[in-house]
Amino acid sequence: MGKKQAAAPVLKREAYTPVPGDFAFLPPRDINTDRNFASQSYWKGVAVHFFKNRRAVVGLIIVSLIIFFAVFGPMMNSFGYRDIVQYRNENNKRVVARGIAPQIPALHRLLTGEEPEGNFAEYTFLFGTDDLGRDLWTRTWYGARVSLIIAFVTIIIDMIIGMSYGLISGYYGGTTDNIMQRFVEIANSVPRLVIVSVLAIFMPKGMGLVIVALLLTEWIGMSKIARAEMLKIKEQEYVLASRTLGAGSGHIIFREILPNTIGPIITQVMFSIPTAIFTEAFLSFVGVGIVLPQCSVGTLIEDGFNNITTLPYQILPPIIVLALLMLGFNFIGDGLREALAPKLEDM
Image: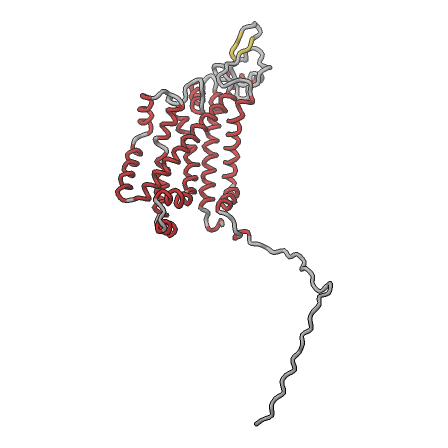
């Protein structure tokens, strides 16, 4: 037997007692974070993409300014939208204020071909007055307010009706979908002017007729988009999981699927608002919309068209406001469409 090896000596570890200066904090480091892939919410990403779009920002500024003047513009003048401004001329006779900025005689002669009567120095008409002596500044912004109210009210109601109709039709499918879509095709085949003509027989002219006419026609586009989104989403796994766990149809449609279809619907709303404004202006222009002395953009354009040979400046303010509204909302709609579904190279 070999010799037994000696056991290795056991080293005793002495207890360490820290002393000041042994430990120190590291200096702050600049850690570069990739902001493109940083965690952010969906709507924050939409906002970032939207405000990177210059046309969308320009459209938002235009619409915001027009809404501001539509709310506060009539308050910036002492004349109401139906007030007829009068003054006394040098012969102490009462004369209706008629013209564009009568305090500037040269501009008045150029645009009207008439000599300004009397002294208008105490009055200020930025857009002039119409043929009856009503201040066009107040009437223009009051008309823009009426047109915007009609557009927003009808589009919100149409969005609720069309969105619900399309989601229900797409969710149940089969016979239910076929019947509901045949009704949509019938409603879409009836010309809008026919609907307005029938409504004009049973309803008085005014804001109510315009709103009902828009409600009967503008919901169809919303329903088609909502149905298409439903057909694309309803077979996904999270919907199947909700159905397996016993969720009802109403919960699945309005709590699970609706939030994932809101993007395309918002884009459609932005494109539908200028359509509603233009439709209201057209109906008022042909005489079945807003009733005088109440005014909208359409009635102001009609008044300006009737007096275009004598007061050509009168048609300019409502036409410019209508064009800017159409342009601004279309820019916003394009920006939202690109922000809600950005291209790969823009991400």
